[in-house]
Amino acid sequence: MNVLSNGKSLKSEEPSWFDIRAIVMDVDGTLTDGGIYLDDAGEEFKRYDARDGLGIAMWHRSGGKTAVITGRKGLALTHRMRELHIENVEQGATDKVAALNRIVSCLGVTAAQCAFVGDDIPDLAVMREVGVAVAVADASCEILAVAKITTVANGGHGAIRELVEIILRGQGKWDALVAAYSANSPTIIH
Image (cartoon, rainbow, N blue to C red):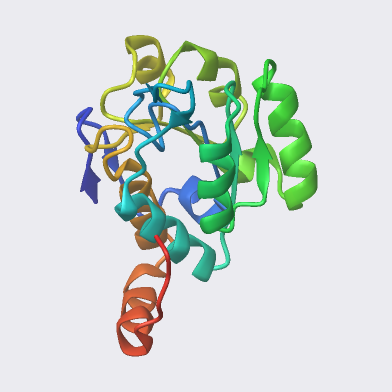
């Protein structure tokens, strides 16, 4: 059993964890620390955590699927998602539930088989549509209220990596993946 920062416990035998096939994420405040950085030319750049990248690589290695739904658009996001091999990216999404519906159709999963990771009010509606709603530790109180679990890590500081480990442990896949990763020592950009 894992105890999370919100005091809730996650039992590995909870069926919803066995059913998760896709992790869908917001970006700003979830995959990043929420900061929006602009240079003098007005070009945006973002800070991503390598631990989250490793978590995503481990999730893919387990056969899991990923997608991103974000209200913002940007080349920094496009480049990072390409590095992480996340092909289903909905940028500029004004209706995140409609975006989720398109994504589940592309991925061949149901909304109930998805975990969605969010941090703020634009994520509320989509979090109510998925099997497991996840809040990062520094999410807004509205998001914390609807989340099934809350990560210990803040957004952009390993929260996705933490979630991947929780799900894969719940599915009984974590130890074998770590052993295979360690034995093969693959070079993965994360």
